[in-house]
Length: 567
Image (tube, rainbow, N blue to C red; front, side):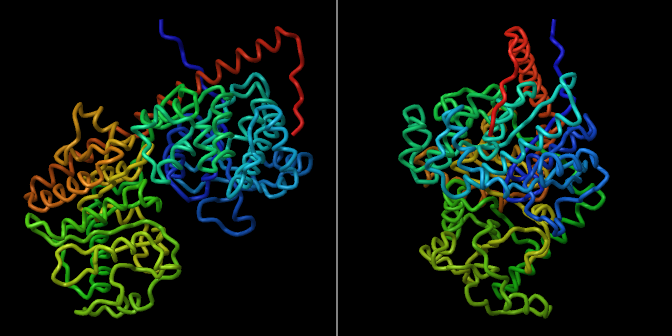
């Protein structure tokens, strides 16, 4: 007999990236929200940091009528500074933004409480640890206040925190509101990312690494400590892929309870009626910018490729991408001009005025601008990794070269000053996307690419790459819509060659074959929709709720009051 899953009456979910677009977790939560909102209308409540205060946010629409009585109580009785409204995404879920700055004056007491109850080491905190922890505490106070005012023990309630930044709040709820079930999702372990980012081999030595020891060596003690203790004490510990699950087991000494793969909501994808028009517009804009910058006349037959994501030069494989494009310059099998974009936000200064002037003139030019590799001026350009590697390889986008590489070092939010189109409006203009990741717990960018019918290249060190291989029952090839390259700690050169060969092969493919590949990419993406993956979340909710129920029964049987925790 299959047991019936317990379904939460309310889900509170917190993240640094709720209504705050800074990375991949924003995409995870914002695309999943619509699916949960459809299932439990307005009982999925997101909690994020209030950075905008009185200013208008593009991601949040305040609504004074939502939970107005509770809000008045929270402000007056609980001294919370909150704004309630809706997250400006498909589904329009409720979001509560909280001002966490007032809690900095309690920081030392909170860290003392953390050490006393959970042995979390906050002594070595630096950087964003304090800010994240104060937000985490504020988010937990929001849950506590809302629960006591609006709910009671008859309701099944889940509090779900994402990344180490929500750890303090999860532990607070664990101690102060034991009737609320807690779930913690690490999207990438802090120490695993640090090992990889410090050029140390992660995978061959993973079994031998001691997480605590590596945290000491890499000065990551506090982030690692809060992440590890949260993983050990919540009702349900989860991550996003099998590859990161192994990382958690080895570095946090805690196997995950569930893997929650990241899905996609294809409502972002243009309908069939306008798709071709939007793709044509994207290609036209990319070519306009490139031609103005390069002094070229590249036409629509140009092969447009790109890589994108956070500026983690090695982890995201940006270094291998540049290496592959450099090798492609000398490949005699290349049959087309290649325009290769690097869409990674760097320390951007301002959009180039000389480029803007050319674009606004509407004229054609036959001479390149100075530094024809970048669309925006950067702070400290001489220290930028992308420009530095291109300079080292003498990649200057010369007229006689078939491969031109252009760095777009800004967030593509439609307001960058050069392209002025959003990422989702641009990505569908590509012929091929390339993401040769070294450290990639999941990999949203390749999933987004195939959802927009753009075939892509990734690696089996990305959770998404492993999922593709398991889904199609073999190593993915470009003909399947996704080529999955085998990557290890040491085969950098082989990966670069594999990318170079794949792009050269793709440049020779007849139009019919390319269309077939685009169709297969689209079909594969539909297997990764949230409607397919949300089932894993319900399993996690069920487990967390059952453990919370057992805890409450145990407390009742002991006939003791729930301990009051001062924090």
